[in-house]
Length: 196
Image (cartoon, rainbow, N blue to C red; front, side, top):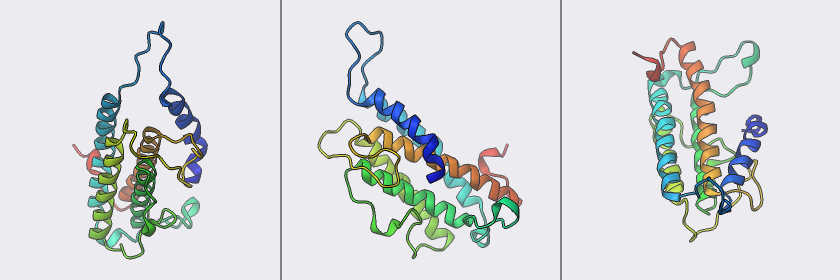
């Protein structure tokens, strides 16, 4: 996630400045934000991110979840299973912040629970993370719960919003989808989203 912070921070700050609750001037041609439209758009975005990620995670054979390339620039990178758990743990952590909750204790430092090891367990953990992220999206516009800052987010203090935290999670997830695709192809698996 740290490698993305220099990319995410400006994007999220721009998004925050557009959504911080300020209404456009009366003479402006810009429509005020509508939380129902924002939620609907983000739920569609969530589906567009979740579907290829879950299908890619499912497409990798169970015996390849421990695969990590080791030559050249890949030395020391996460295994496929670790990538998927990291993606899911980050979803849980950012969704918790968006919902004003404490991050799940077992999410660790974005590595996910130690007890989640098999392909089936990792897939369940991944699916659950998207459900939690969907709840955070559904909470956009609600004033009943405070949003918390997350130590893994470039947005700190009073700047995070539910919208920015959920968008951050979706962008982060799609970044790791690109890595998952590389791992699949290195193992002779065509990602489901690329199949005819």
